Image (cartoon, rainbow, N blue to C red):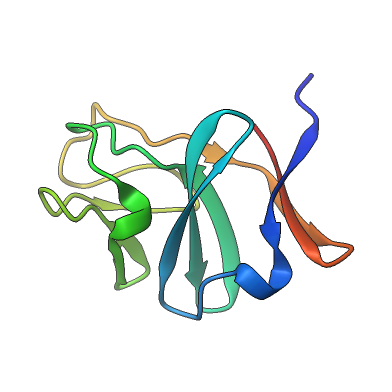
Length: 102
């Protein structure tokens, strides 16, 4: 069973409507602030490996900077290709830091 690992300090969280990339537990993750809700997903786009932490938030979706695939950070789905899925991690902000089960 996966345990929570530290992603970043609460002060490092992205602003509302923004994303940031981090490396935690040996993997790249994308942290998105969707209307004040913090979502943690895989940081590598399953389409062609784009860096989601360098993307943007548009209409509540994380948009890959390489090809514009728009991912729902709550479900990991995209209308661009229903066969692809982004990994979404359980996360929490506790004790002044963001943690996720990777």
